[in-house]
Image (cartoon, rainbow, N blue to C red):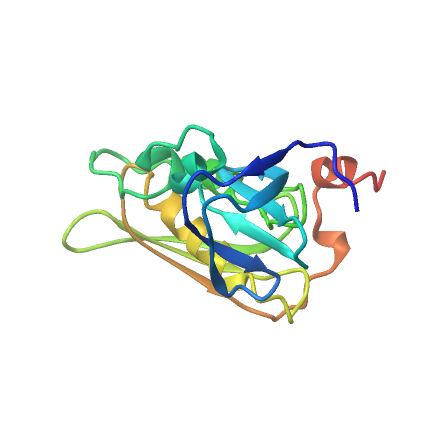
Amino acid sequence: MSYDSPVINLTRDVEAIQIPSGLTKKLHQGTPVIVTQSLGGTYTVVVENSAGLFRILAEDADSLGKESASPAKSGGTPATSGGPLNEDEIWAQLKTCYDPEIPVNIVDLGLIYSLEIKPQEEGGNLVEVKMTLTAPGCGMGPSIASDAQRKILTVPGVTDAQVDVVWDPPWSAERISQEGKAKLGMI
């Protein structure tokens, strides 16, 4: 298999998530990789002379010789500022989450089934999201849900987030937005 991207030798050891199993594996410094997708602050790489793809998170971008995202950009630190919650900002953050094998965000892919905002007595808001995956056997569900949760927590006014992967109703390609279908060459 050939790719247009150059081979990059990892500059340090990095924990990567194997696709599609979702298992974590240490990739060692000097390992040659090729970036196949860089969307939403994460990197999908293929390891030369190894089967399969891996996801490298934004905070580990330096292992690829790229600038690491700030904690707020990568979803690593919850927002601390108060103020009214803007639901559009939550949707905008969800649009920065990607399945590592598909170049369409999880919103336009139709994976988000519901988003509920619940004001908390002690202040702030809990955001509950129900999402699915394109295939029930995909091991990346926890990784994608965790990415969505981290990014939701960066939205001002959100103090807690819960993202659950559900299978009912089953996902189908009809759920993909027009923008997503265009990106995938379906229209």
